[in-house]
Length: 214
Ligand code: SF4
Image (tube, protein in one colour):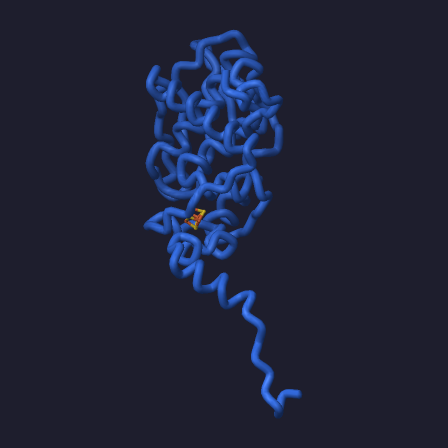
């Protein structure tokens, strides 16, 4: 058994989306506790504040829970669901995102929520949805075996990173301009080792002081 597997560390469900987008972004947030805002994070935070009030309601006979704490002892996960609809066929988690559908990052996060709900409620959770504010539409996500395996494997990779307190290298690619942590990460510097070496050399070189400066 790998040593990190025995570690008493729960993986935050939100870290799964971060890691899927960029492992370094995940480490900056969850290892180094770095946080910075950009237009995407501010809009996302405001959107979550609207649904994250822990209120309960009903529509068409379906009970709707908001801001529900989630955990899984089996997979060592913890987090929160924006919305869970308690449908006759089973719980149905819904995650709110500010932008447009974009890759599988949010699908993995939602799947982790489903794994928690299944364990907490002893119920099957075969599908859920992501509501994208930019297009004001729900996109349904089916929790297939492959999505479940990928989610569990990613949670294990994150736990390993958290235990090792490891900061992955910066890919410095098309993801970076949209990333709120670009100023903390400096991908164009740390992603180019020769440039970094040059800057490190200059950083510790004493300034030359001329007679007029004395
Ligand atoms: S700036 Fe780029 S490399 Fe750095 S954390 Fe963000 S996406 Fe990752």
